[in-house]
Image (cartoon, rainbow, N blue to C red; front, side, top):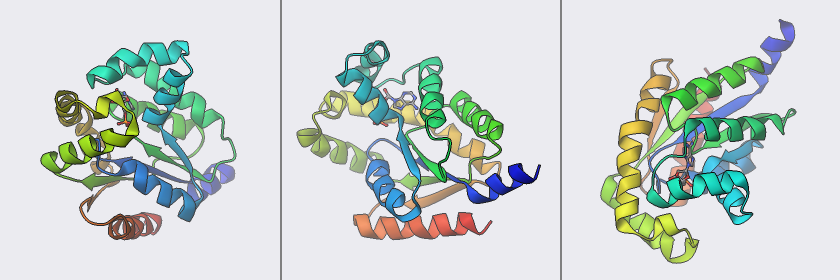
Length: 203
Ligand code: AMP
């Protein structure tokens, strides 16, 4: 029991949330440096698997190309494997996960089994048109096929609204949902994010 309490107190597990193109990856890089957390981006993991042409990568490819979510069964298994690879982590930053309620429930169960929990979810708020412009601009250099086609980008936003946005309410109901303005310079947003993380830390 004592051990359980200690790990609850010492681990920080953040969910970086928001629509595609809201700056989660950029801001995660800043949080890793500052808080020494393990960054897990399910989008990056899928792209790694695809670039190595693994079975998992082949399974994910068609969904990603269409701007749809990879099925929960595949995604949750991949996430679990990645978390298990870091038994001594001080905590995690989950970026692009959970994206559905079943994923959120699976994450809670996984962390609970390790005597810890999600500390807080922070949403980067950015409007639709800003997102479309940002992603198409990123597409000029990212090499990501799903960043290059406006219809696919709009599909990803629609999927975010219907399947992913409810995850905010799921954590808000547990008093763990926070939102910050995702517009401004990288430094301005990083400062807002820092303030949010500090306020979570004081809970
Ligand atoms: P991202 O890099 O987070 O924008 O993710 C790119 C694509 O990978 C998404 O459009 C989905 O097809 C897939 N993907 C990433 N994370 C997840 C997830 N948690 N659940 C389902 N699909 C995901």
